[in-house]
Length: 287
Image (cartoon, rainbow, N blue to C red):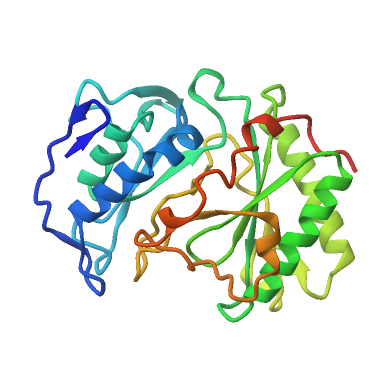
């Protein structure tokens, strides 16, 4: 498959990865090739964890972090230290690498909140709004809107996207001057303020048994080596839904759902929905 300046070999292109939809590996690779002009700028230089489904989504998948061997020489990687050794993470820096990942049956690449040259300094803060049930997306929309208001009170501009799974991510772009601990502390402060305004509906309680049917405002992705689903990533669910950037006013649309757009529809949307995100990088929110 031609992707950018490279021809990327596809093995078993007719392998069906989404059995209920007939979506093949070649279809997945073609989607990532076509999404690359929108996606690469959002994932470039970020270490990737591969969520792979070698037998399709009808069987259990697995996560792979270390890609030390087997990748073509043109696939960029970064060495990341860990206890007792190190790992080599792929960097999805171009369309060809996204296609190569699809050829590894990687349906969803998960990326760090920091970039390879300064891995200790994140440039994203993420709030994951996780509904108590699939029937509570109206609560997710309302909470995302209220969270955006609190972030603006704190002097930053929020951005939102559907996760393609259950909820919404609210994202803040940061200058790379803060350690992860400082970013997490600021995220906890914002989440605590949000929950304090609606304690009957919202919680920051990590354990499900203690949430008592409330929406979980999750800030745990704001940590070194933690990952998040990037915009335009495909999720391993029936229909092949895609994590999709939103205009803020779309949060008021009752038709909105976490899985509203798929690999067959998402590229019909305006490619510039998040065009202002890079220029919005600034200081931590201050309440």
